[in-house]
Length: 435
Ligand code: SAM
Image (cartoon, rainbow, N blue to C red):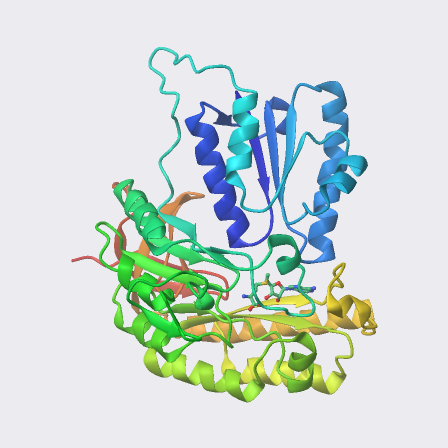
């Protein structure tokens, strides 16, 4: 049995796909590169912007012909595209299963319903390809409790549900035993992790005891074999000093945070329903940078939100110029069905949205180019993830991509001191520091 997997969207989707792939491999399935070679096709989808949704519908349409020719292929659609299932069944009758985001058990169910009992071949294990990558995303919560007016994620993924601490610790230990050196704790908003869990001996939130993200970091800090810990995405209104202090103190937690600002104007932030002001955001960045000098900071920005004036956009631009992030994910506002912002007039013309988006991209390319250039000649510690196009590829603790070339040894999973010899905005190159 073969499976073909196609994933777009956030890190959570990629983590879900990895989990689904592992389960399929346990059932004896092997991954193939072309849908026509598969017995099971899994599309893991995103609808955060119209452009993502268009890619999904394009993919579904292109697979219709294949399904007509080979009706025995099972086609499953998973992720945030899946909402009103009867309507989807009506629209895409050639799809066999619609699976809600992160519901890996439903993928297993579909696969087992169509899998003959395993008969291991000589010299072949039915559980193949199960060596996980060096760096793995581990979902710690599903869904989101924020009500950002532009965002469809809560509508598709539901309210926030945290996984119990012990379950996550067990998973991280298991991954580390299998060679994983870095985990990224994932959630739409990791900073509010645990608020829905009954506590053991932890923090008080609204009169009740709950574990929080800081407790979770403490719980995995000593896992044998683990080298690095990251977490994303944070929400500026939920990040506590206790979390910042814990992240700064624990040596395995990387100097890397992703804290979306979305806009540099208070009026726009209010209409987005973000729950903080620009001044509060600036103060938060200052506290993070004080606690973690040299931290790699990433943010998200939306340009062209309904009613965003030129002056409000310029305030965002100036904030980015001022705070000098290591990464800015910038998107042009895209109205999403059934969100409160969809009812607002989408009054920034597409060409103007694109102009603002490109200007932010150009600014950011310059800033990150300058930040990275400061690393020229310095030695950084790179956790090597894989060999890529004839070079070794890995990341610094601050999440910078580094390539280096050296003969001999397999460096996968090793932390290597690399002296930086070339820098660009998106990556760096270097040489292994001897001795
Ligand atoms: N924790 C994140 C936060 O605080 O916003 C949530 C991650 S969100 C699902 C991913 C990003 O997609 C958002 O940060 C936002 O920049 C972008 N996004 C969401 N809805 C959008 C929309 N309607 N149009 C354009 N970009 C959007």
